[in-house]
Amino acid sequence: MTSDSEPKLYRVIGKFSNLTDITNSVGGALKGFRFETGFGVGNEFTPSSAEDGLSFGFRTDIDGKLSIGPVGKYPGGLFGGSKVEGLPFFSTSIADFTESTGTVLDEDRLETDGVIPAEYSSISWGDWLTLANVPTGWFIDHDGNPANDSILLAYNAGTVEAPIWQTFEKTFNSVVVEAITTGGETVTAPATVYDPNGDSFGVYTVTDTTTDPATVTTYTIDVSNVQPLVATLEEGDDTDPTNDAISLTELPASELYTGDFNVLIDGEAVMVAAFDVNTDGNPDWADNPPKVLDSTGGLYATWISDEGEDGMYQLADGTFVTLDEVNALITASPEEYERVPGYVQGPVEDLANVNVNTTISVAETFSMNWPTCTGDGIETNCTFTLRVTGLNDAVEAPSIPVTPVEPAPEPEPEEPAASSSDSDGTIFGCTAGKPGSPFDPVLPSMVLMALAGLWARKRRGTA
Image 1: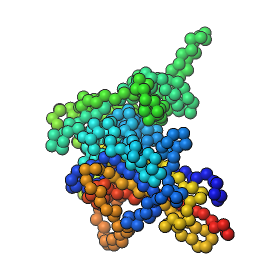
Image 2: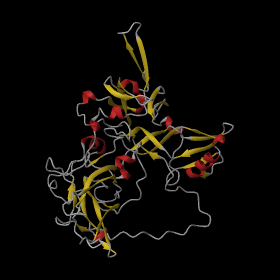
Image 3: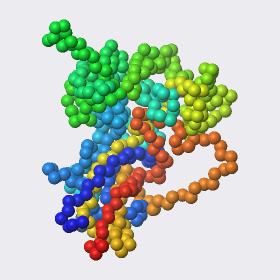
Image 4: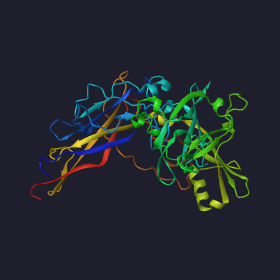
């Protein structure tokens, strides 16, 4: 490596979950986060200095750090849409964080400005909610397999004692998009072809009247690919709402879901059952969880989402078994069992998550004196750390925690009780994963993002 080489840029993307304990003075709420470059973890963390060749990436056209998109934003499946996460539930605008002016030119520190995005704060009462405090939602398990993502249909805008079940109706506008056909062609078509309740769902017909007789061409649209719709939203850098392919209107779940409304899921128009026919405050969906039938059509198992840690199946005889056990049984004998879709209730987990995005620059001429450098006399390997800290100015920042130590595994019992594994349980939300265990009951919560694999290697000149 030569001293005049260009620096290497690493794009750092991930998900930062607020798992702070709710018993602290602010109920686990956060206002933002801070990135710091350095070396080591825990109380051995050493901040990066201006001379060591490690820094955030910076743009050359303007003064500021380099990132492909916002430095942090709430998941696209809830706000703004995403090619991967699908169409948004709450808002067609992205809910993104902005860097504080105080760290814009700081090469080793990045801190957000303490302002929660308006799209998010309107449903969170102004704070970035910890997982334990996110609203509850109703989800459809459209394939009858709780191991897969369940799709959010409604959320509780009230309280546990007095729930107010709200939803957002998607209206597919006549905006022209670059749709993709099932054959891979690109065709200009109105966004209404993606409407699962429309007359032209998945089909676009063009009539050429310049020929005699007129020529009619019919295209079958791949409506499982919603990127053409997302491209018109703010996520696609289009800030003009008149160009949005979809619009969202908030209304009570009981008004939208009356038994004849379809939602677009994986390219299919999925009929949603009536939410509450009797409007008695007890949603009918509660009586319709996912089930498994046997080969005779009889009931084999019913999914109970609040049983155990992550939900369990209840067999017809009243006993409980894990999701893994039932899925293994179905995989081994698929002709013997049938999954039945249903509805589940649980936290809207992605409201506790922020997708983070930044870049790290490592100069080819970085200092060989990093405290993490080790060598064998021939080559030297050096590691670095990106430390992430949750912020809330209402509480005092805690001291850096001690260096994490992996706990010794507990011995397994001879006859382990039926319980959920880490892979068990309904995944609540179109993008929600299982975040993990709570952090210390202090704010800001500390996350040490060890960038495994992002290491720098430099051979000695005599090698």
